[in-house]
Image 1 (tube, one colour):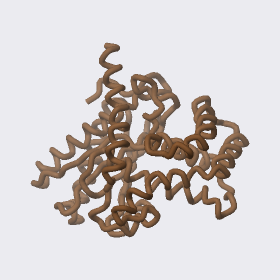
Image 2 (cartoon, rainbow, N blue to C red):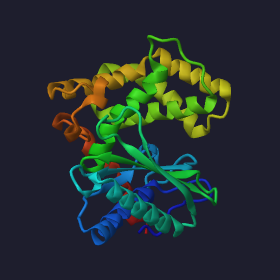
Image 3 (cartoon, rainbow, N blue to C red):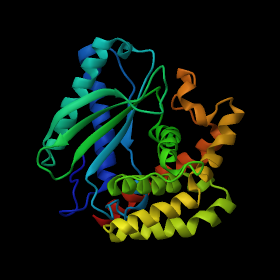
Image 4 (cartoon, rainbow, N blue to C red):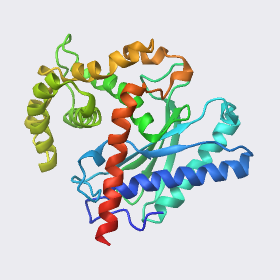
Amino acid sequence: MPDGLFAGPKRINLYYLHELFRHSATMVRSEVKQELGEDIALNAGMWGGSYLVADDTGVSKTNVVRLYCITSVPNNSILDKKENLDSFMDIYRKRLQENFKQYSLELVDPKWGEPIPYTNRARPTTAMQLWDATKRVSFVRVFFVWNEATWADSIIYDTIRNIKVIKELLNIDSRPPVKEVQELKFLLQDVLIIYFTLRPILTPDFVEHAEPTITELFNHFINGMHDPELVKAQFMQVYSNALVYGYEEALAPAYKEEGLNIHRIEDWPAEKINYVPDSIKTILAPALEAKFRWFRKNLNSSK
């Protein structure tokens, strides 16, 4: 378990958070084997991308209060039975509560089970959410994605879903919708997360087109984007620059070669959940994992 988690009243070390999620899944795996009698391979880590713009030791540059995790869960296991899945979720819930309690968070009111939109129809992603009674953070939320995969593969695969989510508001074939400012801020944050996640495979022409908008948006986020008019203006800039289509173009060809349409990810065979073509994986996975090796190196050298 990490020695610490928070780096001041409004900062969190995202490397330590990633390790906490990873270690929690390892502990759950051991507890599931003990209670249910089967070894269930689990891989977990941070979801959300704020680590992509943390400082050199993994400390967040903004006040992160929503703690997201993504966990891959194998298909064709004892978890296919509802009673075993219920037991698994209860074990996971208890482990999160115990582990986060060590950092003075009190996770309460757990809820889980609703399918996540734009995920596989046969085996939809689900989530567990627990609220922090201390109010230090808002909540901890874990996405459970079927099929055993590395953390990096799950992040890349889930990016397709996230693109579909943001496209609801960024579809240039529809008039820009009127939404609450907070919803627009979350969307703009996802625009940044997807950009930095896919950056190594984006086409040079698209990067040249998108970089000014992304740089401006990123700087506003880092400095705090509290003005509603600024949020709306940034949304319109992202909308008019059609960034979501560049994200799709970076992923679609490789999946199409495998007979998979990213626009219909809900209809993929269940065995293709968490699937990433090698041509994408060999570029993006090392880049994602390198961030945490960099954090660890700098943390070790600072001791």
